[in-house]
Length: 292
Image (cartoon, rainbow, N blue to C red; front, side, top):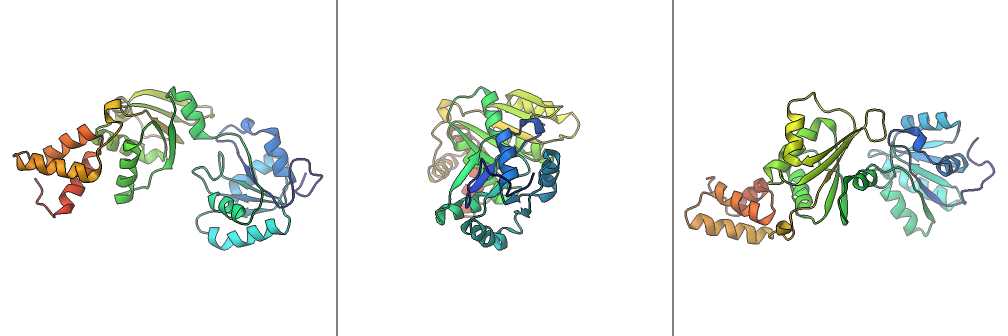
């Protein structure tokens, strides 16, 4: 079967967001397979990965790559294809595109040009992990945190301050680092659910405190596979964290009373649901204070 065959599920000039399996190929819906067979072109995060899926399905359709290094130059061309009447499917390597995966810019461009956008629902690691976590609504999906530096610290502070459950993806070589950062930020008692290799043969789940998860992984082999983590809601007493300015002022008051800067930051961070390291950095940077 090939793109352009007798069409039942696609319309000319429409953009389709097709969810692909996150591990188990049997999770691909029959409608998703039919849409992939009927479109004129498939825009893929990695054409090698998608090519393997299409070959498995017996589908032959032209593909274009869509990743960080090609998006700018490809966007106008794909939009023009849609304007010319082509039916275009967007897929990521796994899961629903435009949710923590490439595709958002294409969707935004399609809306801007008044082109139809149609999702073909299916597998999503974040949705599946949250559903199995047992946590109540609301929940927020953050995807992958920045790998390092100030951007990572800032995003982690936002995660910890947000109400409800928080869904994160993490590379296996950074899972232990992330858990350590959560403990250092005072979140060791919060409930955590993690799953690795979701939908695959060796799928594995954990539910317990962040501190327990840290201890469990500390002495074992290096983490492997794809990881999805669901951090439970903060305790109600921490649901409304201090603003940074108020937190820095609170540290100043404690220091004026004789408390060391590091201890004052620890106390204020614990009371206000703020990451201790980030609070100390902000407090120290505000007036270039000597470290204490």
